Image (cartoon, rainbow, N blue to C red):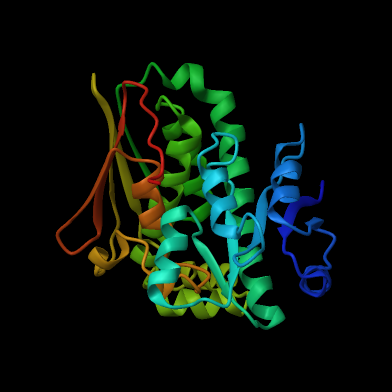
Amino acid sequence: MHAWPILVVDDDPINLCIIAEYLDDPRYALDMAGNAELGWEKLCQPGAGYQLVILDRMMPGIDGIELLRMMKADRRFVRTPVIMQTALAMPQQVTEGIEAGAYYYLTKPYEPAALECIVRSVYADSRMRADVATQVARQVDTLKLVSRAEFHFATLDEANKIVGMLAAMCPDPESAALGLTELLVNAVEHGNLGIDYQQKTRLRREDRWEQEVAHRQRLPELRNRRASIIVQRRPDEVEFRIADQGEGFDWRKYLQLDPTRAFDPNGRGIAMARLLSFSRLEYLGCGNVVVAAVDARGETVMPPG
């Protein structure tokens, strides 16, 4: 397995050394840039293929926010995840970063475990999307012929297999896969297994999330629960209706990227799906049913700003 390429952009050599020490892991291949200009040059190098950017906010010349806006305005990097490092943690400052496209945050100074936890989360999400992309490539031609289908799933592995098929029905499979993955994973972990936001945050920080999911799926009271997804293709859109057997949740506060949750390793998936993947997204009733749609006319949903 190839190492995962990460670009670190920070004007402080000491910070670069600290991050290199914190992320000394054979899974990662770190590349360093001492300013935003060099960072942009490295990003634009043919074949660079960075899967994550760790970006300092305050730098002379082009600062982190400006570099982030440059990335999100370029189709090559619009979906590249960015972890923003900052000493500026006031809500309005965090909101500015979120609006520019920084969905992961770290406040300086931070402990090694905080950086490792966020990077693990992004790494796991990236691996999941790569698996889905492989499935999409295999099935895209056949699934364009499907007009309606219904699937049932119980595990995260089953959810990921379904995502590949569903995304292949959409004009922009990569974008659709990002949002569908979030919604189907949410149906399993939050819906059927009852892992709430605070519990997932703790489990992510302790690197025990996958073990807890597996444990709960063996419990007698939960092991027979199933979620379902119905996909309907119409002339103007592809609609997905996802339902789980959970008690629902307060979905309203998760539709927007909230600055108070920006420093947690989770809690941004629904908002990102709404921003990046779907032309519409709405929860019904108590929140155990969600309806999402993709524009079938081929108009890609792009993030604001």
